[in-house]
Length: 293
Image (cartoon, rainbow, N blue to C red; front, side, top):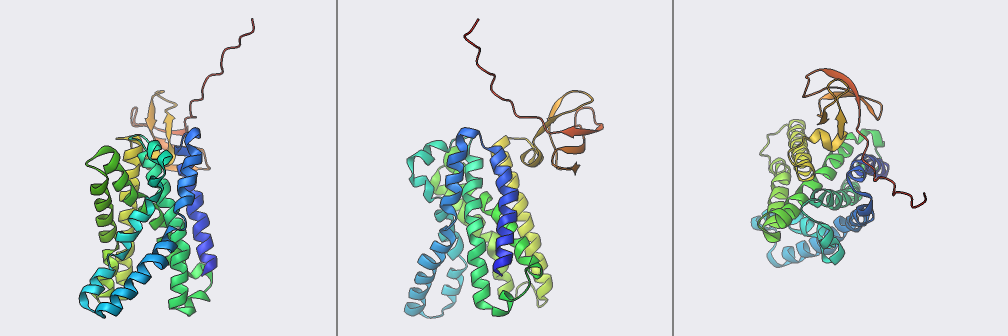
């Protein structure tokens, strides 16, 4: 199980981390990295330091009542969404999160939490079912795929809170939106546990995977919109390019074929022709003029 957790961590960090690093201006990278690292342990802290003690107190005080079972379905959104935002207590972080940078900071805070959650969930699964702990890592592809998607989804939840804070009605409203989205993102799991998805467990798992994938796509769309405005999700992943035919610049779509890390075969939205393209290099600051004659 731990091998699968490390593999999931490495894949998620490589994919999402490289995208985040490319989106971030050089002067902002140390702070983005600090935000990611700061939220890494927060899933473990909130689960073992808040959720379990609170659940134990409620269980001893009220017993296994039906309302407590429903309250448990809200533990994750009520504790995890505020936990991802604790770096906002640091003034330099609050000042750095602007209307323009809110997307990448949300991505960093959510990604850090999701990466840490991989090991927390792996430990819980191994403790609940010792047989899983002895399975080869390649048989745990369901865990690997789900945790990979959840890393991106956490960024989307955090983006709701930060975008509302910097662009909308305020921080409290944004936090409530993030909690609500998180609750409904997890709700199909509750439905399966209560048997609402039918007796076929494999079919129920398929429905949950499809729902998780839809949440993942929605999170990418939101972060992309915050980062690029009306530009496509393709720009988040593939950047901009210049058509070799009509010489017009455009944001690259997700519809195309990658060949290696730079070469891509895609359709230009201006001339409507297919071309081999390369990503447009980022503009660099011109060298200062020499003071020597």
